[in-house]
Image (tube, rainbow over all chains, first blue to last red; front, side, top):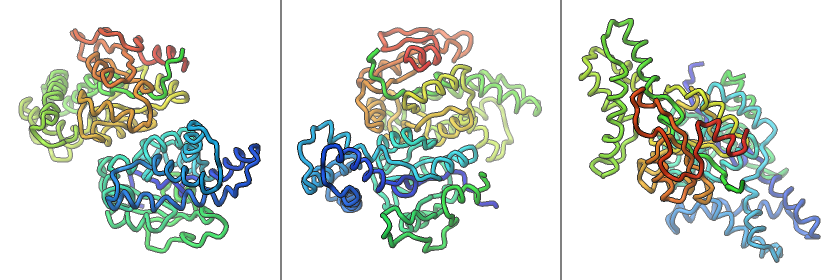
Amino acid sequence: MGHGIKALVFDVFGTLVDWRNSVAREGEAWGGPRGLKVDWYAFADAWRGAYHPSMDKVRKGERPWTILDILHRETLDRLLDQFGITGLTEDEKDHWNRVWHRLTPWPDTVPGLLALKPKFILATASNGNVGLLLNMAKNAGMPFDTILSAELCQHYKPDPVMYRSLYTFLGLKPHEVLMTAAHNSDLVAASKQGLSTAFFPRPTEYGPAQEKDKKAEHDFTFVATDLIDLARQLRAI
Amino acid sequence: MGHGIKALVFDVFGTLVDWRNSVAREGEAWGGPRGLKVDWYAFADAWRGAYHPSMDKVRKGERPWTILDILHRETLDRLLDQFGITGLTEDEKDHWNRVWHRLTPWPDTVPGLLALKPKFILATASNGNVGLLLNMAKNAGMPFDTILSAELCQHYKPDPVMYRSLYTFLGLKPHEVLMTAAHNSDLVAASKQGLSTAFFPRPTEYGPAQEKDKKAEHDFTFVATDLIDLARQLRAI
């Protein structure tokens, strides 16, 4: 094929793991026995809904560099109040905040990564902090060779610095690095920095009513149905 | 045991891989057929001998941050001249410089890491740049969960910033991180930043006449005979 890809770097939330069902199911399992009447899918959506706005304050320099664990916690404290969930100890709040360290992979994620691993360097390329991603990878069995994160360059995606940090740290040429995501905007931003791009959809990431990112909207290097299909296109299966 | 260790972070050159024999043997295999009369052990020792002085210029601020691949290459260019090795193409020089990406692990390294992997987060804690360490890990089958490197904080060991970056990136308390090395000075510097410490000797790292680092000279958290013994002490075997 002559694609020259040496490393795959992955968006994580949504692309590799199913944050919405993971957060909601853990909420139901925790809140049910406590008799809490909470719409945990709404809770998950609200938590994720604060993701971009909270990072944007950092990206625009309205506050100094802050890792995602702290942004998540600030949102959680607000949501607990908003959803009327009271009386949690500090340890319980911390455990809840770390639900983002325990997200469940989509069914094709781990088999796809395992197939790709012998032929390619595999790394995250996520706005999650290193500790969060490392715990998630260990917990879910996602066999990355290393964790690359916005934390390492103190710039959140889609800042160009973040994409450039990926090939710089890997010691590779931009086109040798394949940014892999289920989000068109992430790949467009990566492409502007010279990275190769791979898209596959996660049509229910945001729930059954999801409208965006159902398909590739640009001319990416690879367009696949899921990670296993991408591994096949890369001749790793 | 109640040691509370959650992650092991490893010095790499000397502790996990045998740089001296790796470089010398590759020199012999390459130089022999070309009729070169070079003492490749002296060549390896001279190359490694420039390691600390070259990093010290960066550490003292005499030059801006420079990754180890570049420091290695500057030394290589000087040594090729000094050892009378001439006529190499740029590709050959680059391949030679990347001998540091192809170092061979000591016999207990990979089995030790594999035993530790299910129970602990495993990371490098090396002055090697990320790309170098990643290629080395992939080539040697060393199953790290992530690559932590001086490159990520732009401070070479033994700068305190480098040791503090390890537990910061991992999201752990200092004592939960076990700095593991065959070098007393590395561990003393790590200990000053609150990390737990593990020593085992590599008595021939510098060749048969090695005098230093034959044994633990301080009261480290763990003292072992090799990585497998350390894994046993940590109840991972």
